[in-house]
Image (cartoon, one colour):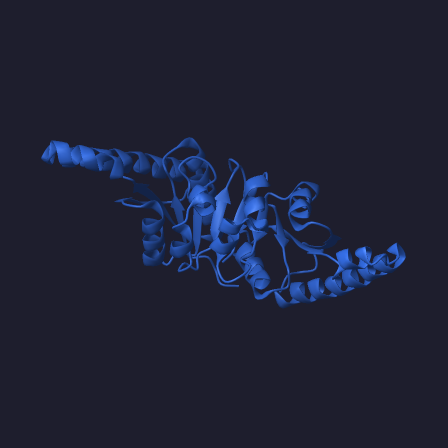
Length: 294
């Protein structure tokens, strides 16, 4: 498992975004990773004013940036007081996603942390069209914070489909929460079950196919656990039949998990987020935080 070395937390300086910065500090404290706080100031609304006012417009932009720097320094001081973590601060002007990708690459960040509300990155993920171009070039997992943090993550729900992304998701989960329990979840379906029912195949036969499919998935899940180097104690294995989105949200509550870790499916994370995949629904419907592994 590669250790987490650097965390980049982006904030719009709102209260919900502060929760993301505080969660980033908790992860930093647990992993000894360097923490950087970033605020991207959108000065586009001031452009017309600058054109009208000339130099005084530029002075207004500087005042906006100075105010943001002051607030970010105050946030860093609060984090240091509460968590004992020293955070670097940076304020840049520009488009959120482009600057975020640039800063993430420049810092070689191993984790990007953002809030789920306000002028957040996640809103751009789900609704934006530029996000696909920007994040197709980043290899940084994204932690979306929904809840105020009170303690390190205790129990992680990791849905897996046995693709290469499943192993990466497990490793990213362990890197940000090394002390947490893991629940590996696989949701299966009987191949062509719908067609079998349409062909009036007996329910007992379909039930038998489900038993076989569950047995095979359980064997694969054990093999994945061993391949990832997870301990038997502290790692739970769940194989369930049904709709993936429903089961993931259900098991988040049933297993009392405070973080869901979803892997990338397909060639691009944003393909899933923009096209209405399980990942998008989990981001929208989960109660707790979500880590999107890329």
